[in-house]
Length: 95
Image 1 (cartoon, one colour):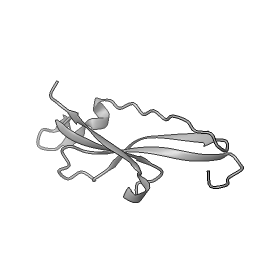
Image 2 (image 1 turned 90 degrees about the vertical axis):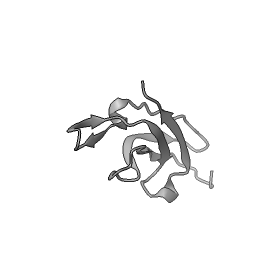
Image 3 (image 1 turned 180 degrees about the horizontal axis):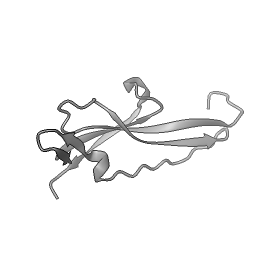
Image 4 (image 1 turned 30 degrees about the vertical axis):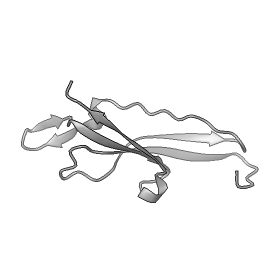
């Protein structure tokens, strides 16, 4: 709580590390949500991802492609890796 006695706002940001990282940035912003909390309060933030969030443009195929494989998930308050304390992953398999 750091002795704070006033309400404050923060923007939770969700970044994905693409499974097919060929030529793609290591992390891409896929969602964000501003939350305002009173002292001592906490909340749950939910992000929903869809196929488009997982896709990248494949110039050879001239189309959007949703790769299979492991995606890294990062949540924090900025794109700097040090500011993304929540992380995990999921695996997309061919559907």
